[in-house]
Image 1 (tube, rainbow, N blue to C red):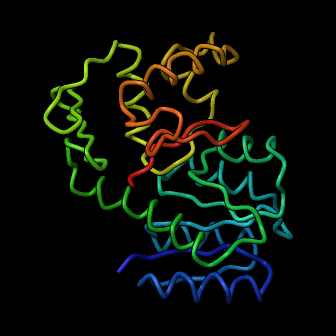
Image 2 (spheres, rainbow, N blue to C red; image 1 turned 90 degrees about the horizontal axis):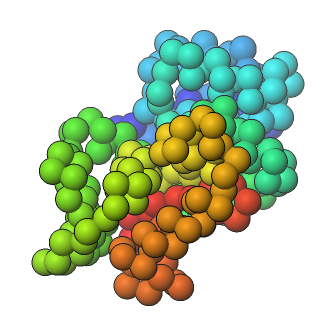
Image 3 (cartoon, rainbow, N blue to C red; image 1 turned 90 degrees about the vertical axis):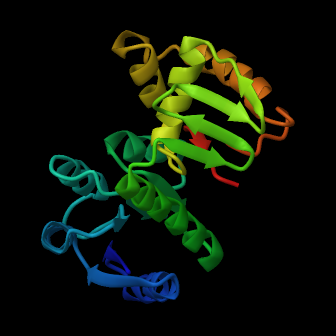
Length: 226
């Protein structure tokens, strides 16, 4: 059973989210403010933390940054803030995914399952990641689609490796540019457009309708397991 810490000040939303998480087989510990939530996160050692940005005592962004100083646990943001700039701030602070209120129970559960799959995959330290007919061998640095090996350039492979390491999570433009090209290129988003288009042509059955390499408009990219 997975353990989840839910940090949300609205009781009605807490009940809604708790019901959804428990239906996924999670044990849920609740906190109604940032201070209590950080204590719960530190003592419970959860597999996932769900955080509202609009907390009464501290902004949720501060909570993310503090937790990231001592833990790499997946963090899912729930927020009424729908602006792209807010999503980017939260993701750059260290959140793994962002769900805008109001949201449906099915979408919440799908996001939670994706993040918990990362936990399970990390625990087994599996060097081979399978995404439908795609197979990525992180040790041999090889990529296959069915029985055919796909030849990637060094930059393409590095981009894919970063996305694989964050499977199911939105990786912002700045994060990708920093990790692949370095900190001096964090504003060169045209690099990403060119190389992501190349990756899609090589990895997707239909690059115009990508199944795995998804775009979060204005925010970044997400690799998903279909």
